[in-house]
Length: 459
Image (cartoon, rainbow, N blue to C red; front, side):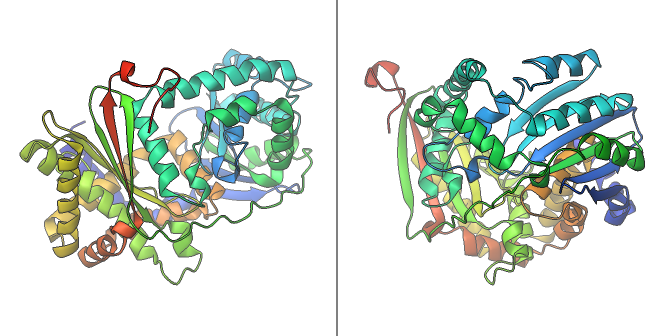
């Protein structure tokens, strides 16, 4: 589908369908053991998406055990007293389904996509491993090697990922967001099965989980299945993670990462608030600012006509690629990231100067009505078309619940984006795009033979 057609249809979609209509399709209930279940009926296809979200991720970890949430995710497929290693995946496959899991900064989630008739299979298996994981030493010894190799491939042998990891560790001094989801290699090497057993016992409980079901199902039938399979799972005392608030930054931070690579890479990260901060009653952050930052990301990199791609890539040819990233649904205050690759013959320093010029322009000149309208349409179009996916609908609900937001806020997104003004966008740029909240990381390509023989990378 052409981009213009998608935008036109999206515009019609969000003007014709009020958010309250989407919210009315979802229902929430809780079991006596504290498990929250959210069900959204979607009868377009005879399938169902089932997700179990646990409120624990890398931001709950501390030094010495980083990566433990991700390692436990791997071990969740290694068997219970009732089902041996690999049985979970085999049973789902036999029923024609797909299953997997993912770990994030603030959550760990497990999902299945099945024919609607097999939801009970998913519930039975997930309920079994919610408190019944065996975590055998011999299985852990094999799987932790898989985790180590994953880190080598996805981070240590990936120059851009390594720079991102280094930059975030420098950006945050006390916030747990300085820790990589996969963990530091030294910590991974020292983990043992006993560590994972303790982590599992602490966080994996029905009263620390949310089950989200979206698809061709009937809510009352899902509720009956949830009571049957998850109801008997005992609750457990879950002590909240201690607050680790980021200290105020007092100047720009810089780092150069020397790594074998073909081209340089630039990372610029500004400290910014998130929706949870604004809703939590902060005197210094408003909801309007958070949604203005979302629009700002669209202004800079929301499609081919956005400023970074149009000005830096096509017109000035300073960048081969440039992008802006912001997530308003993180649990803790986060980063607004600008990342870019210099065009051939250009340097990261030239690229940083060009990005700073774009930032200065946002601060000094309000975006005009036509550009703001186009960017809003693009941002909303992305949301509208993502909601066309059952999996994404479930993702929205699970993500918001695990970071401490009411899932119903997702249905206010379109209206909040539409309400953003040019003045709010300019004000947000002035307030948050400042050197006292900035970290700059540059990846400097080097020959692998120029690095120390014992080093996998150098700073």
